[in-house]
Length: 416
Image 1 (tube, rainbow, N blue to C red):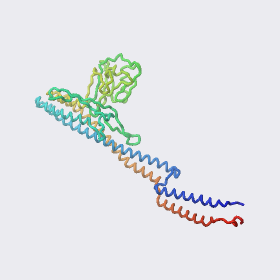
Image 2 (tube, rainbow, N blue to C red):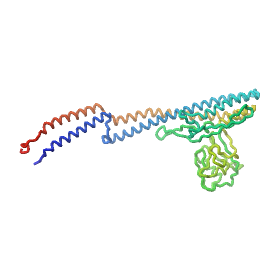
Image 3 (cartoon, rainbow, N blue to C red):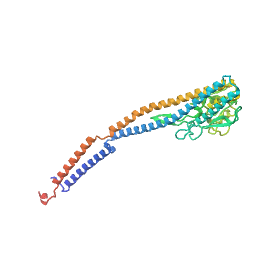
Image 4 (spheres, rainbow, N blue to C red):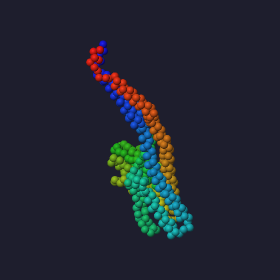
């Protein structure tokens, strides 16, 4: 015979009532959050998928912001480069006018005056900043004024003028991630954007007997090149050529000295690393602690200059009154400047075109991730209201039934 305690019905009914109250509370919370997944245990697989979709959507949102910031910067870069191109085109017109052989020296000097003013504006453009106050053409030295002009006397000029322009930035580039595993360069080093010709550095040191004395390293245009004891100048040149740098090295067949040549118009960035003096010993770099690109050896012969060098050369030729010099080296250097600047503008335009493509793709994919997440998490309000009403009805019925059944027991109830 099964014995039933007087407390058992009360405890059972209380347990099931609390359980229904818990279910109603859970349903109410889900309706308030408008999500069917309040806790991970509600649906572990759906929760995992939802988390992944939300993460993807957040990353895409960040990519979209990165693209907008990069496009703003590239817009500033492109605008300033186009202004520089307009100035160069005007300088070319003046140069052609000065080379026609019909002007006297004073008239050529007037043209030189205008070119000098355009040169000053060109330097202002090269030192321009973006919307955040960062230099556009200083590499990663964002707070550095990238180009420093040196003033001096020019034959035929009325006052001190710019006689040289040095680059004080670096060759670093910062990249912004625009999609999963994909990034784009944001900045543009000035010694690339405002360079005119391929640079050549000829050492005057005979290196036929040279040997590297200890393990060391050099850096060429950001590429670190390890050297081993006993490496000859030919081995050093071969290692430079094998490095991922836009510079080719060779040994001059006449002087047995090292020669560095760029493969595209830019300024060579060379350094000795770790206390080594290999490039100093070979006559490429000067002794001391000067930073690139101001560390070239004074004995080395350097060819190829910046856009500013080409404009200065043309201006000085006009002040000199040399029609031949204006028409030959002056205009030739200016043509090289325009050609290189056009290529730089093309690369900036290509980046912007890529950003447009990625932005359109993200504009489609991000809403899709949100939709997928919605399918996993969203609560069907009609079903939820129906379920809640069902729980409420059954709970009310259970309470009424319990009230009728659980009367206060009498002594005769235990004697039956």
